[in-house]
Image 1: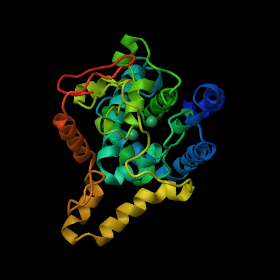
Image 2: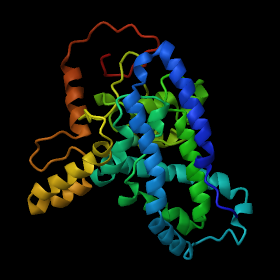
Image 3: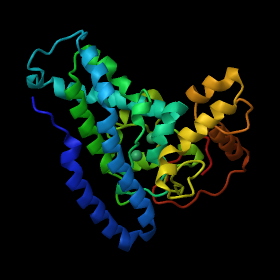
Length: 318
Ligand SMILES: [Zn+2]
Ligand SMILES: [Zn+2]
């Protein structure tokens, strides 16, 4: 079977779509694009492809070794087993959910994944903002159970490529809501805007790649409200368009925390959630959400805010 990388074929489509959205933005939402921000996002996209090619070899080596120990065997012509493809795609998406969740909850992995979140804008170019340093986390190793089950590494890579292509179009404010049935099952612009938001209620929510059902199953789903303006980016915004700072700032922050911390806490700065500190001097997303919740609970009930399509939940003021 020839090597096939679906994302490479999709690049012209990405470029055309970004240009189309830029034209839309010019008339409808001029603030949604900022040239320097878009350039940084494009550099991330380009650099991540180069970094992947340079650093992906080690993962491939491990995967091929693991494949030798597979439990099930789809045979020499594994690519001709048609039903293995949709199965692999769904399982790979489940894997993506957990890699992504770990990417937000383990600082070592966040140091890389933060790259995808550091833009304060939300447009199709944000989708291209992919990490350069993913190979330095153990994220790729989440594929090992699939390989040990018997899925060929190339099949998983192709499914992962289509997964990434799917995720491109959801990075937009140009689309409000999709039909109700689609919103119920699939990841959509609305669900993923929540994921990129820094509003306390939205922190660490909607980790899905293609199917939003995983968030609903594992308790991390949060619907988008139309009565709350989204603030995009990260809790402590970058405040600069310096590309190298954007790539490495969290690695630098994490390593300097480890360096300064007492011995018994060093590992926690690597493995605990972003914002964790041994002296409680910083905020994790859970702390921010809890504080916001108690603040909302203390407030007297206010008049409902007029909204196009408010989604009220019991026990919460608007
Ligand atoms: Zn994320
Ligand atoms: Zn995203």
